Amino acid sequence: MPSAPRRPSYSSSSDDSEDDTQQVDLTVDEEWQDIEADEESITAKSLFEDKLFFGTDAVKQVVDHDTKHHGVDVRVLVRRFDLDTISTIKLINYVRTSVQSGNGTPALTSVEEFANEDKYFRPVLEDDALLFSVDDILEMAQATENGKSSTDSTPEQSNIAKIKELEEDLARLQAQFADYRNAVSTTLEERWNERGSSAGQAGSSGAAGQISTTSTEPAKPARDDDTHYFDSYSYNDIHETMLKDTIRTDAYRNFIYANKPLFSNSTVLDIGCGTAILSMFAAKAGAKQVFAVDNSNIITRAQENVAVNGLNGTIKLVRGKVEEVKLPWAAGAPRVREHASSPSNGKDVANGEVDENNGKKVDIIISEWMGYGLLYESMLDSVISARNRLLNPNTGVMVPSHCTLHIAPLSCTDYIADSIGFWDDVYGFDMRPMTEKITNDVIARSFAKEDVISEESARFRTLDLRTVEVNELEWEAEGGKFEVTIGKDVEDGLDAWGIWFDTFFLPTRDAQLPTAARAETWPGQDERKGNAFTTGPGGKPTHWQAAMLILDRDTKKKKGLQKLSKGEKVVGSVAYRKAKDNSRALEIEVGWKVVGREEETRGRQVCMLDINQKHYLDVFDILQTADYQATKEAYTREAN
Image 1 (cartoon, rainbow, N blue to C red):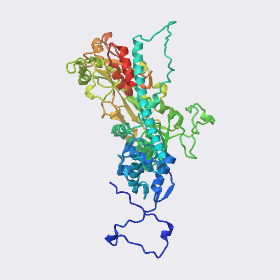
Image 2 (cartoon, rainbow, N blue to C red):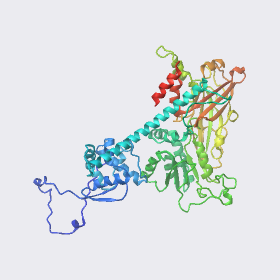
Image 3 (cartoon, helix red, strand yellow):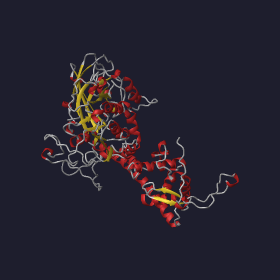
Image 4 (cartoon, rainbow, N blue to C red):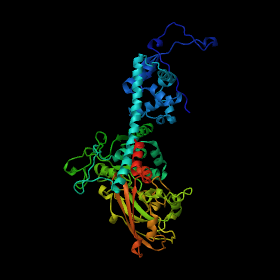
């Protein structure tokens, strides 16, 4: 652990002049050691600006100043988080680090922001008077808690300050509770309305096709799918999961470091930068300028990550939606004259008009946009928008460059027994209602090669990220045809369909991906072709896992799919659609037919991939009661 900060010595100008006054050395004789020296005048600096304070009460002046002018009272934070000496030191250094990195409003909502980080024990400011006066700060906090004024204010002023603090705490808690209540209430109401409609409980009158209601409630605003999406990336856990996924992170790092000539002196746009790990890879590879864009609160952490690694001069962080942001270009950055056929935000750049970025373009776009089933969360829509608006249309490179989607039939008897058959007999009770809609959900789960019953998987869709457009990210059956050959006799037959994606990093703009390319064998002996990774059974598991669509057991029996023989061919198609009630969720439909068998062997499976809502949907889907209305009212009261 680093040593504690040393106490500095401050003196006035008169102390530096010569005089005849004899100085007393308190260390010469032990009998003098009990004599207290005069209280020392010190110099202390504000946490948020360069303003200095002097005197024996300089620390108190700083605390009062920062409370009044910046809205941050260290004493309140000490009490709220119950900080000890070490934690208070870390708090001070955390705030100074944030301010130095350009974040004038550091996050101070949780002790986790700083208390568990040893790096904040290292002084940011040399001879920081606040650090050696931590005991004084703790005493101030205790005095305030005991009802004593820590600012020499009147009792009335002290009470007003305490009331304000309590009101702020109450408002924060009320806002958190309101968000939670609204989320649960919205989910409940959507589910109940869905059930009520299907049961014909919606009242109707008047002309046919018209629905009347006695409700006087105002119309609900349009669903906001973006807020929850961006908020979900504001916390450490999800970023820790992604960074620990070495298949994912190493693929980006290896490509960047293996292609330093590509990144050297280039301008890079990192979309959805998160912790800024990809931006820092690019900067280390020699990029001249990196724009790191994110619309979640994690960008404040990214800013600090960039600062502590000394990359402020290269990486510029931008908060906002990439479809809307204007990049902070340096003065004199070159403008790009595009070909007349190049997309340029609806303007004819070839005829002299420029977009809102003044015609300036980036050389490389790098983004980790992939979601479950590849397209869950619809982040690729944003990447394409940025590509069309901001990437050099003549020489720009997309990282990654291609993604392919694959499908294979699965026989996973053990998983079916553990996860579905389990409900047949639970401590002697039949709980099969728990599985009522399990086949309506896409399950995110990795599976082994042994579960695949075809000779090879089938690629049913290829996305060239250099050219694909948003309207190509949804397709019907004709756009996702496949054929597989059963590779072994399977007595239990087809249990599920497995879908996964491969991601390729090709280093040149004109490089072509061969039709038969597989990530697990790419690039063979030619490292100049870049690198790749798979989320399928041919590689190590990733945090994306794979997408599994489980067949209904009754359907399996009816379709004669309980036994498949080696050599049989299965033809089919895969459709991808955005969910109607959530633009970031995904609906996947698989249709298939065993070639040469009767028509009954044709099947169709439609499943929803919506990880964020799955917990709520599972809970409310299994409600089985004769008193429908009473149950609805009970759960509504609980939600409120």
